Image (cartoon, rainbow, N blue to C red; front, side):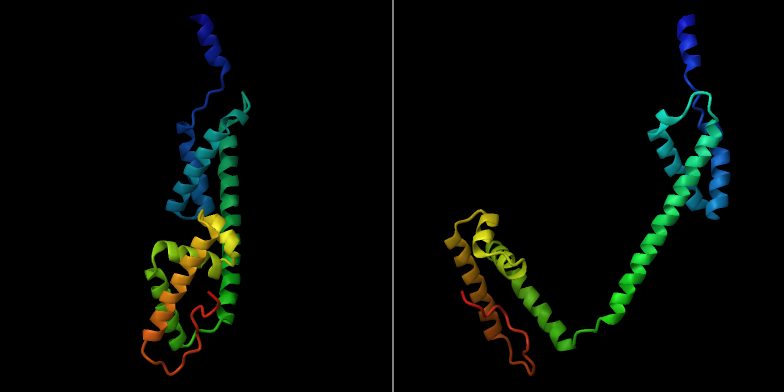
Length: 183
Protein backbone atom coordinates (compact mmCIF):
# COMPACT_ATOMS: atom_id res chain seq x y z
CA UNK A 1 0.00 0.00 0.00
CA UNK A 2 2.83 2.41 0.78
CA UNK A 3 4.34 1.61 -2.55
CA UNK A 4 1.17 2.68 -4.41
CA UNK A 5 1.02 5.95 -2.48
CA UNK A 6 4.64 6.59 -3.35
CA UNK A 7 3.84 6.03 -7.01
CA UNK A 8 0.96 8.47 -6.86
CA UNK A 9 3.17 11.14 -5.35
CA UNK A 10 5.77 10.74 -8.08
CA UNK A 11 3.12 11.59 -10.68
CA UNK A 12 2.66 15.37 -11.15
CA UNK A 13 -0.52 16.76 -9.67
CA UNK A 14 -2.66 17.92 -12.56
CA UNK A 15 -5.23 20.11 -10.77
CA UNK A 16 -6.70 22.04 -13.65
CA UNK A 17 -9.96 22.87 -11.87
CA UNK A 18 -8.01 24.92 -9.33
CA UNK A 19 -6.52 26.97 -12.17
CA UNK A 20 -9.77 27.86 -13.95
CA UNK A 21 -10.08 31.25 -12.25
CA UNK A 22 -6.65 32.35 -13.44
CA UNK A 23 -7.26 30.99 -16.92
CA UNK A 24 -10.59 32.78 -17.24
CA UNK A 25 -9.20 36.09 -15.97
CA UNK A 26 -6.29 35.94 -18.39
CA UNK A 27 -8.53 34.96 -21.29
CA UNK A 28 -10.89 37.85 -20.46
CA UNK A 29 -8.01 40.30 -20.46
CA UNK A 30 -6.85 39.01 -23.85
CA UNK A 31 -10.23 38.83 -25.60
CA UNK A 32 -12.16 41.57 -23.77
CA UNK A 33 -15.29 39.45 -24.29
CA UNK A 34 -16.60 36.88 -21.82
CA UNK A 35 -18.01 34.49 -24.45
CA UNK A 36 -14.76 34.56 -26.46
CA UNK A 37 -12.82 34.11 -23.23
CA UNK A 38 -14.80 30.98 -22.34
CA UNK A 39 -14.18 29.58 -25.81
CA UNK A 40 -10.49 30.37 -25.50
CA UNK A 41 -10.25 28.64 -22.11
CA UNK A 42 -12.06 25.62 -23.53
CA UNK A 43 -9.68 25.41 -26.48
CA UNK A 44 -6.69 25.80 -24.17
CA UNK A 45 -7.92 23.03 -21.88
CA UNK A 46 -8.38 20.71 -24.84
CA UNK A 47 -4.81 21.49 -25.94
CA UNK A 48 -3.53 20.98 -22.39
CA UNK A 49 -5.22 17.60 -22.21
CA UNK A 50 -3.86 16.57 -25.59
CA UNK A 51 -0.34 17.69 -24.63
CA UNK A 52 -0.38 16.68 -20.97
CA UNK A 53 2.62 14.46 -21.60
CA UNK A 54 4.76 17.54 -22.25
CA UNK A 55 4.16 18.95 -18.77
CA UNK A 56 7.34 18.52 -16.73
CA UNK A 57 7.03 16.97 -13.29
CA UNK A 58 7.56 19.63 -10.69
CA UNK A 59 6.82 22.38 -13.24
CA UNK A 60 4.48 25.28 -12.62
CA UNK A 61 1.07 24.06 -13.82
CA UNK A 62 -0.51 27.51 -13.80
CA UNK A 63 2.28 29.04 -15.88
CA UNK A 64 2.09 26.11 -18.31
CA UNK A 65 -1.69 26.49 -18.69
CA UNK A 66 -1.48 30.26 -19.05
CA UNK A 67 1.08 29.86 -21.82
CA UNK A 68 -1.32 27.50 -23.59
CA UNK A 69 -4.10 30.11 -23.26
CA UNK A 70 -1.74 32.74 -24.67
CA UNK A 71 -0.67 30.56 -27.61
CA UNK A 72 -4.28 29.62 -28.38
CA UNK A 73 -5.16 33.33 -28.39
CA UNK A 74 -2.29 34.14 -30.78
CA UNK A 75 -3.32 31.28 -33.06
CA UNK A 76 -6.88 32.64 -33.15
CA UNK A 77 -5.63 36.14 -33.97
CA UNK A 78 -3.52 34.83 -36.84
CA UNK A 79 -6.40 32.75 -38.13
CA UNK A 80 -8.78 35.72 -38.02
CA UNK A 81 -6.27 38.00 -39.76
CA UNK A 82 -5.69 35.40 -42.43
CA UNK A 83 -9.44 34.98 -42.93
CA UNK A 84 -9.89 38.77 -43.11
CA UNK A 85 -7.16 39.00 -45.75
CA UNK A 86 -8.82 36.25 -47.80
CA UNK A 87 -12.19 38.00 -47.55
CA UNK A 88 -10.63 41.32 -48.57
CA UNK A 89 -9.03 39.69 -51.61
CA UNK A 90 -12.33 38.04 -52.49
CA UNK A 91 -13.99 41.44 -52.15
CA UNK A 92 -11.59 42.91 -54.67
CA UNK A 93 -12.39 40.10 -57.08
CA UNK A 94 -16.12 40.60 -56.57
CA UNK A 95 -15.79 44.34 -57.16
CA UNK A 96 -14.08 43.76 -60.51
CA UNK A 97 -16.75 41.39 -61.80
CA UNK A 98 -19.79 42.63 -63.64
CA UNK A 99 -23.33 41.49 -63.19
CA UNK A 100 -24.69 39.38 -66.02
CA UNK A 101 -27.51 40.97 -67.97
CA UNK A 102 -30.93 39.83 -66.84
CA UNK A 103 -31.63 37.84 -70.01
CA UNK A 104 -28.46 35.79 -69.60
CA UNK A 105 -29.17 35.13 -65.94
CA UNK A 106 -32.66 33.89 -66.73
CA UNK A 107 -31.38 31.85 -69.67
CA UNK A 108 -28.66 30.22 -67.59
CA UNK A 109 -31.23 29.33 -64.96
CA UNK A 110 -33.41 27.72 -67.66
CA UNK A 111 -30.46 25.72 -69.02
CA UNK A 112 -29.51 24.62 -65.52
CA UNK A 113 -33.07 23.52 -64.80
CA UNK A 114 -33.26 21.57 -68.06
CA UNK A 115 -29.90 19.95 -67.34
CA UNK A 116 -31.05 18.83 -63.89
CA UNK A 117 -34.25 17.39 -65.36
CA UNK A 118 -32.22 14.96 -67.49
CA UNK A 119 -32.18 11.34 -66.29
CA UNK A 120 -29.28 10.64 -63.91
CA UNK A 121 -27.18 8.60 -66.35
CA UNK A 122 -27.54 11.17 -69.15
CA UNK A 123 -26.81 14.10 -66.85
CA UNK A 124 -23.76 12.32 -65.45
CA UNK A 125 -22.36 11.47 -68.86
CA UNK A 126 -22.91 14.97 -70.23
CA UNK A 127 -21.39 16.54 -67.13
CA UNK A 128 -18.21 14.49 -67.38
CA UNK A 129 -17.67 15.40 -71.03
CA UNK A 130 -19.12 18.92 -71.38
CA UNK A 131 -18.32 20.38 -67.96
CA UNK A 132 -15.34 18.40 -66.67
CA UNK A 133 -13.74 18.16 -70.12
CA UNK A 134 -13.05 14.42 -70.05
CA UNK A 135 -12.68 12.54 -73.30
CA UNK A 136 -15.39 10.03 -74.11
CA UNK A 137 -13.00 7.22 -73.18
CA UNK A 138 -12.12 8.81 -69.83
CA UNK A 139 -15.78 9.50 -69.06
CA UNK A 140 -16.76 5.93 -69.95
CA UNK A 141 -14.07 4.61 -67.58
CA UNK A 142 -15.15 7.00 -64.82
CA UNK A 143 -18.78 5.92 -65.25
CA UNK A 144 -17.93 2.25 -65.52
CA UNK A 145 -19.85 1.83 -68.78
CA UNK A 146 -18.81 0.84 -72.31
CA UNK A 147 -17.83 3.68 -74.65
CA UNK A 148 -20.88 3.13 -76.87
CA UNK A 149 -23.23 3.37 -73.90
CA UNK A 150 -21.66 6.63 -72.81
CA UNK A 151 -21.88 8.08 -76.31
CA UNK A 152 -25.52 7.05 -76.53
CA UNK A 153 -26.31 8.72 -73.20
CA UNK A 154 -24.60 11.93 -74.29
CA UNK A 155 -26.47 11.88 -77.59
CA UNK A 156 -29.82 11.43 -75.82
CA UNK A 157 -28.96 14.20 -73.33
CA UNK A 158 -28.04 16.64 -76.10
CA UNK A 159 -31.18 15.75 -78.03
CA UNK A 160 -33.33 16.39 -74.96
CA UNK A 161 -31.66 19.76 -74.40
CA UNK A 162 -32.04 20.68 -78.09
CA UNK A 163 -35.72 19.77 -77.90
CA UNK A 164 -36.10 22.01 -74.87
CA UNK A 165 -34.37 24.80 -76.80
CA UNK A 166 -36.52 24.32 -79.89
CA UNK A 167 -39.74 24.31 -77.86
CA UNK A 168 -38.77 27.39 -75.86
CA UNK A 169 -40.59 30.64 -76.73
CA UNK A 170 -38.75 32.91 -79.17
CA UNK A 171 -36.35 35.26 -77.47
CA UNK A 172 -35.19 38.67 -78.57
CA UNK A 173 -31.62 37.85 -77.54
CA UNK A 174 -30.41 34.26 -77.87
CA UNK A 175 -26.63 34.43 -77.45
CA UNK A 176 -26.31 31.26 -75.41
CA UNK A 177 -26.36 27.99 -77.27
CA UNK A 178 -26.90 24.58 -75.73
CA UNK A 179 -24.41 21.89 -76.76
CA UNK A 180 -24.84 22.04 -80.49
CA UNK A 181 -21.63 20.08 -80.96
CA UNK A 182 -21.21 16.81 -82.75
CA UNK A 183 -23.11 13.88 -81.28
